[in-house]
Length: 461
Image (cartoon, rainbow, N blue to C red):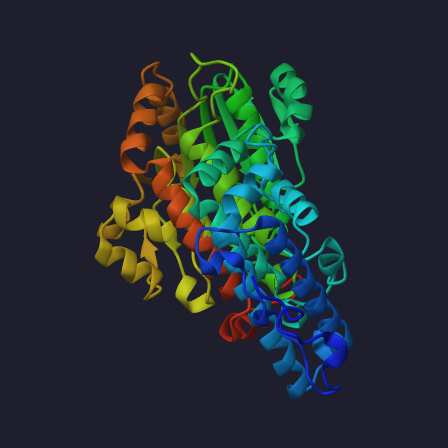
């Protein structure tokens, strides 16, 4: 791998107006199989340090003029080219080092932290993220794009990607803390979710009412904790997810399933790319679909899987509609609807692009995702997503009837086999690799930043 020094050009020899850019470095991986990890690591670290120094001299994003912005953009582009090359050559070595040769089971954020410490320059430093606390999305450097590059490579590798997905489906430490309480009392109240057990049915009620049950970092964390508790609890045989009763002026006294991603939080830079965007897909949604993985130390154990019911009142928009596609039974009130306004909002709707066409057909998935059509519960096409449509006052009775049916002993094994045939984890892994890269870029699309600027705290969707 050639460096600036190897080319006979040192930083001291550069003229005062000449700037080094990271893409002047070339990894040994570009020259063939004789990759040199140590040399490539040193080159990446040096290039990232130059990049960080340049950004420091340019000052905060919001204070840059056109010239400074152009220089920052070019330097970002160059370091990202280097990071992709490095990962193309060394992703297996990076992942094995960060997981102690596949013996550790990190979550996404833990993996990123370990890789940052072991391979300086591969990801932005923690201080870079800390410096942007409270900064609006439009005024950030775009470090999520660098995270997207990293996870694109990890999920793109079969060994690393599947190991990470299995690790993400393990019960969280937070769920283990609440486990004894839930098993003893059948009730746990979290900031955005209330979990209660009645008989052998566990109901997760979404209580993020200030924003019509829109999804934010807290909501995702609470949903995963609650899903874990249901899967861990031997007395909970069926899980139900339903929206709580709203105090919002337009829906006061009514239940609402979900308004999708909290766009006000996205505008304010409060949505975590790793813990929210990737974490919800690989975390609680994957657990609803696939359950908890079998323990590594028990060759005879099976995954802990349970049937799940979604109960849709009023609407399931965006992320709420995405969620429906992993449930075993979806019950909807006759006056409800679902929509995936992803193309209008400018982002990719999670794994809906993978799942909606399979659940319905490719014409309807394009009609909903690309065209933005709203599907009423009574529309013919809704039958492909909503299993049962009943009058609003019949929802409780229908949920109870479905839970009783799905509690049958053979349901779990058959659900596992259905999921194995319909969406093998390897298919999801490859999708998530592409999703990580494209969604990270969409986070900073001009259209996205313009549209979310209309949403402020308290305004909601």
